[in-house]
Image: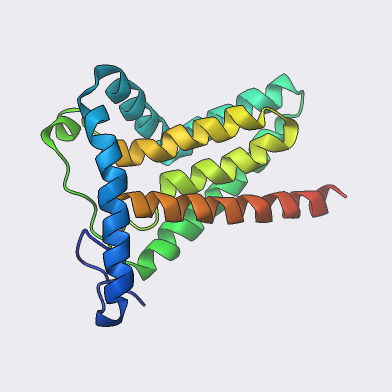
Length: 192
């Protein structure tokens, strides 16, 4: 079980030295891309809004309801909510407990905007995982660019608001891709 305590890498053990340095470098480079955007009023408005909308997967539950009602399939909204609930349980109470990664230091702007700070480990990003899982499930009925585009905005917002390191978000995205495929596979089996 990895027990990272520094904000730099998900695993601070001596054997993780080279990997930890590569992860640190990845985080530095990607975070550098976000720095200029953090002083942009429009980017801040979009990213802080997206991050807040992702709390408790609210945006995905709402999208599920809207999509299923528009198609006359209200059962699909319930199904998506169950899938997102299972994803959250697995990521937040399972995977995150394997890691003790400290979240990035927040700046004063984030504190002023009252962004909710979870008490769970930073690694992996639950917002990113939920976003990709939901996008995979919602895309079964079309509008794939819309759902995945929205998922990427929510996921990247967690870097922008300094709630996650970029590698946390990358791991969350990968986790969500896997869980989304499993959810769609299971849904196909249940429907047939």
